[in-house]
Length: 351
Image (cartoon, rainbow, N blue to C red; front, side, top):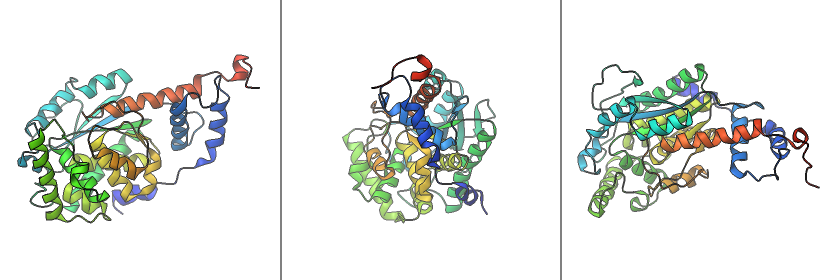
């Protein structure tokens, strides 16, 4: 049995037997029932995923997967592909948006080279798991072989297993890869069947001419590759990126280890979509951090069936939204575990 098959086989349905006891505690806190809204929902779901009445979040990790895309050669991004390795250096030196927000929420940033077209020297904070030096151009053929897609998925699973053993309580997903919104739009178009223009956004800030070119490239990629929407590995290998596959694998590994995974924006949700297509039970192990500005994100959210925490007009990626989401979940858990009950505080309950 492969690592992928083993991880998928370990994923069990969420046991809702604790639900009444957690809800009873929430309802007995010194507040009108339900008055802390979705923060209470986050606490309840976290308890069910972890199968505990004593939830805690002591160790948090944001995994920022980096990979290059051959389709960048088509001019679909406002930035050149050299930005991918440059931003990896920025991550490991602590200067990127994800580093700032992760420090604010007390999360570790794990930078993973899973497919960057650059040879990095060993560096603190960088995990080298390169499957290949970027994908091939999806406008001309498959992004990667099916074996490479599985290998990239298993990188994410390996990291989930490793960090579960290290005692981490929650994971967040992040990405870096010039032209990866093109691959993500192609994935959601293939799976949803929606028109390409409806699920394609402006990524790093392309103009109208750039948008039209990007949509045309995605259409060509779908025509050339003819992905089977009922086969997630086929969709991933033909249209995806190594970082998207790594994110999908992390989500699978998180579910196999009963560790919640907070999913960032558009690119991360493409990974989540692949993971859920492989095993629908995974849907109950993830949180959707925010709604991205990217046009196709809502279509992905509709398929997954989760309401995102917030809509802050974010479109950076890197794991920035996931870090904010972890903070909100932790807030919900502290409400559950630290807030006084009516009995504790000597406060009269509702008549």
